[in-house]
Amino acid sequence: MDMQQILAIGAQAFMQNKGGNLDQGSVVSALGSLLGGSDGLDFGDLISKFQGGGMADLVSSWLGDGSNAPVAPNQLADMLGGDRIADFASQLGMSPDDAASGLAEAVPQMIDKASSGGALLDSIGGLGGVMGMAGKLFGR
Image 1 (tube, rainbow, N blue to C red):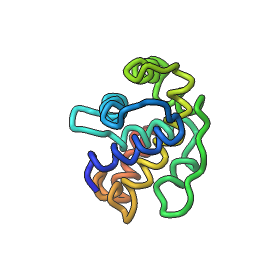
Image 2 (spheres, rainbow, N blue to C red; image 1 turned 90 degrees about the vertical axis):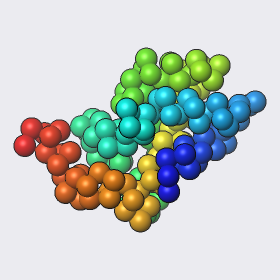
Image 3 (cartoon, rainbow, N blue to C red; image 1 turned 60 degrees about the vertical axis):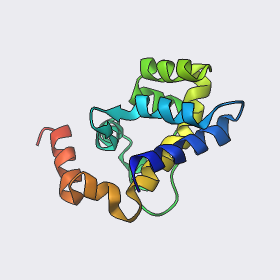
Image 4 (tube, rainbow, N blue to C red; image 1 turned 180 degrees about the vertical axis):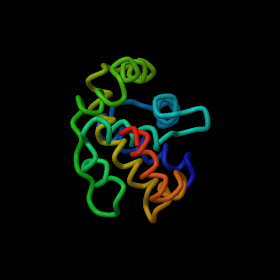
């Protein structure tokens, strides 16, 4: 699954939660800005932030093929940064609280779809890549 498809899945999840008169293209663009790195979406960095923030079990549920554990909007805002959430919200003409609530639905689905069948693990170097990220995170 390519990154455009993953962004579209995230946009659909966000729009189902927040509805309104949002345009999918605008949501896709805002998600790309929020979650993007210099080479596109940086799920490895996002996963590292959650793991470092004491939410490793939460992220593990998203990476696996089972059900996704829910994330609270405030947890997501803590991990992504309030300024980034506010910028995302501004792009869509909504409050940061509404944006964080919609993202709490979208981000787990995006990571889940990106990791289905191990695709995300492959993109960050497999299990060794995950362990390497964890090692960097904990100074090993």
